[in-house]
Length: 444
Image (cartoon, rainbow, N blue to C red; front, side):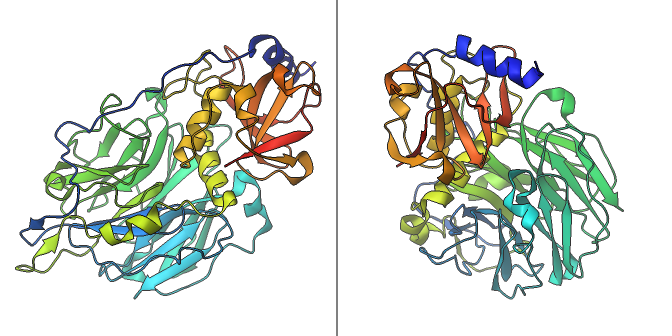
């Protein structure tokens, strides 16, 4: 019997019914001072944007609001990243399916949405980085592929060989190189971008990489709030796991490197160093990325610390079911490699229903605690119609949902991500027939 077969057999014996467990709620990070509403700030200052999975953009610190995707615009897949033009008067949004949308003075140079491989989970786009001068950009995919457009030069791809999956891309300031970072903290450097180390031994689940202003280093940021500096990157502080209120999605640095912001899934930016003066709360619910404005605000011009407040109603709308499912999948995949623990809902360990609960909570949907309860927490769909984020179930008697003992999160088709068993942890793996219920649940 194969190793995967042994895991599947063991799940049936171990994953009986998850015990109810309270999910920790984290208070505001000490020293971060996120601001509710708006307040005046003396310019010059540094600004940034926060974007969410539906393409709503919130601005803070004087960064200009240049537009968001229309609230009901149909996307190929959810928005996963953002990059700004050098003058701060434009930006691009990228989707998991390779689509690119331009705003302000950002020009459209092409997209990867026509590539078939991007419809597989391993090939989804995870980030976008701008080429110097604003005349091009790179798209990075989870499987290590890189796609270049305009003046952005193709410099190579990452040979992952089981070292996690790519979560982000950062360009060197001079445009002749870029770095890719994986979920396990590995860093791959290309062109003139120098390697300064990685965090593979730290055991943290990395969500982003950010280059320093001079390109002599970078920061890696974890979902738990750790900010890990390398090269000439300075350590200004981090959002400790006990003080954040949602998973961290990314980090952006001030122009002079004297501080930075980290943003969580709720769209709240915590500021450290000089970044603390423009921290802001809830700029874009279901946030996926934070990006620094490359241009400082003009001296003497008053700015607002929370210029994205007018987007709150749009930002709070997750959108179509497939977009919410993509957000749940993105969260679940970020947990791959974490251990299984009965009754755990994260952030360091999960059981099967705990992973489903936390993943859909990240997408803005609350689920019951146990697998059997989750089966009735949405619309039932046939297995032939699975979409990313749908929940699939196994039972000792597939005709009786009351006997459900295991749940997994579908990636679409026959692939899933699931918390398997003690010693197995969170894994991406295929469906198997024994005990599989004929209907899945699409949470609502």
